[in-house]
Length: 107
Length: 106
Image (tube, rainbow over all chains, first blue to last red; front, side, top):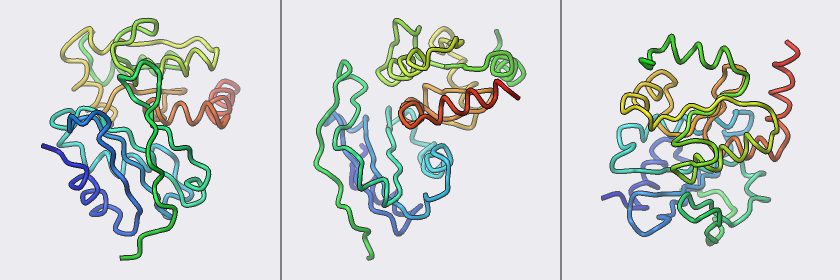
């Protein structure tokens, strides 16, 4: 079973300095939204950012991870990002989430 | 259709906008595919869509060819831009229009 904690740890193994928050969209441990704030995303195209992470998670797609929606933001973009997450089974509506912390983790 | 890399490349070479998706644009079988189809329709340019549920070989073949593990996949002038989330962001910030127009003039 995939947990949000495991996903966040895996993201940090790729991007040790990022701020990451994984959300289980339906409580079913297979549809996830992950928001990542990472300063090195600056200057990278959206696809390059996602591929860093998708390449890492590839062995787990589509099982046990059926859906993984990645929001890859620079710290600047995170300042203006909304709190609504797209839900692929929500009939066009979004899910309102708690906003990711705005500062970088420096652990 | 055998879903060979040559066939897939020919599709994205032939059409300026290509959407590999689950289902058809007006009958998507997945929320992400539906969102990608809506982005294509909002752009207002003709696009080709490929239903990757039409053949069990399609998803593994397309994902291996593109080196991108999820569906849908959006191609502009032969280049993969990403899935529905990137397509929507690029529609909203104007870069999808820019990329489409730039390739058309070339």
